[in-house]
Length: 182
Image 1 (cartoon, helix red, strand yellow):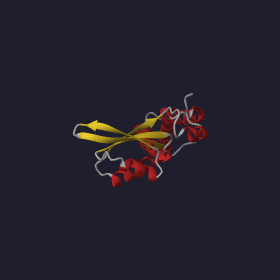
Image 2: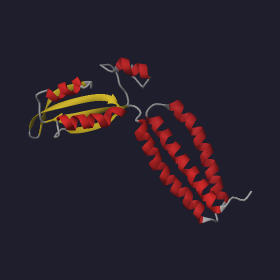
Image 3: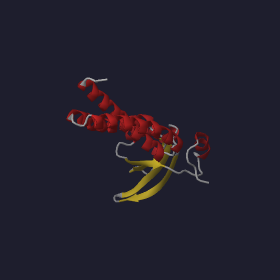
Image 4: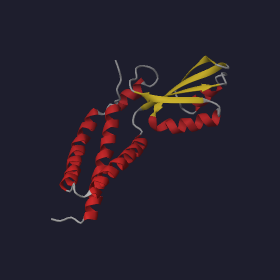
């Protein structure tokens, strides 16, 4: 069966886009501790990749097919990243440093439902208040908004929390079956 060249380009682009999107999601699942889901997804990923490569290699004389595969690959990285942002899997720890060391920011954040550990620290220009907040990754943008509203000069840095043990969150985390060290 002969496929119209333009349709073949669209098919190859779509296959490559799907493959890389799945590959990106699989990698994120592995990093976040969802190994079985990642393994299941990899089966579909390999099948799609073999189909796409087969179409490109069978029609290697047509440079547009190779370009379609490469463009689909690039687009798949963007789409996969956007999906990862929407999934927001796992937990993050945000460190907030405030020039106001009165403890007011910690109280305001606790009043809004955040679990906050705070302590006094020293910065280049004097005493500071450091706050550490553990939360589901989906809540990270809202925390930034709230902190900027309460303390526009606060410094915020966040990073993924991979292993969590003890403390305020442990019961909730065990129920959600994330990686918890004993």
